Image 1 (spheres, rainbow, N blue to C red):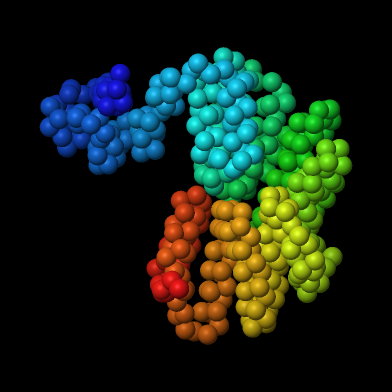
Image 2 (image 1 turned 120 degrees about the horizontal axis):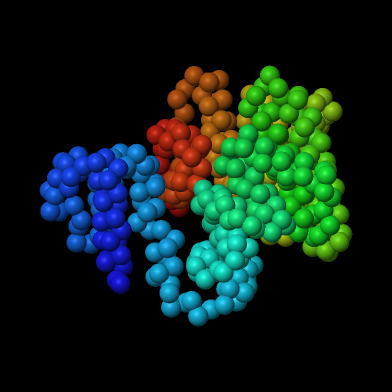
Length: 415
């Protein structure tokens, strides 16, 4: 069956479903969709956007659900049927190799093919986890979230694998700023480990990651819920301290320096919450961030260590925005740390740090406008527009900020 025939068949099934759901005749359905009854299915099998929107309304589905029906995992599996001669273990290893080499799109394709030939719940869950890793590498965090959720829906998945997926689910929510969900899922996993101490390397990593995610979720919440800032700061301090120690232990066990880089991110988060707890002055915290960057960033290796210094820049900006009252000093310090964070984001192609840089820069711009009374335009070039658009695509919570930046922007010519 050709792709066009498959699409036409799927649209026919969906139209039939809509008729049955509403109890309508073909003519009544066509009238509701604003179509000729004889032309409901286009020759290409691809419906126009207005038909998708109207069909979603008839079915009481979301537009995303209707679109997903046309390009489902089952169809992807049919289109890669020639790859079914591969064994699951071979595809899984290829996906791991693709991850190590940064070939994230290839990783997702291999994972989808592996899912199509998987024979057990564990294999399907592992394929979902690989797919999530590929989407995460491309900054497609909503896709990553859905892949992890699909893996967790598999019945009978082994405990270690299920707990790893759960920690990744918590992180996906954290990345997308769904902080209540992130800390709740991570907290459930932490509670399990409290009664069942980890015995395997995978479980030790999942435990450390759960504390990392919950700690940073609490750290972000202290900036959102000002009346409970001290409460969240205490919780963040506890989790980040334990996560830092756990990752340093794993680094010593494995000899993998990337885990020490993750521990360094925890240490930077602790410096930020120290200010809220009154354990450091804002000036002392900013100086600690600056010393860390001056001393170590030049020698930082790409990966978790370099990313950790990018997050130190963001933590510093959080402290500056909350605590520095002198506007000139605030603007000067923010420029230093956002510029360095932007360099790191570009070096790593990190969408998570880019989102924070744009958000911080927009906040700094709003402060400047508020102090001067002048409507100062954002200055952007074509590359900035491209990156802002990509950030809006990846972070729904950023879209309003992104539109504010673009609407107030002054385009400059590229040199």
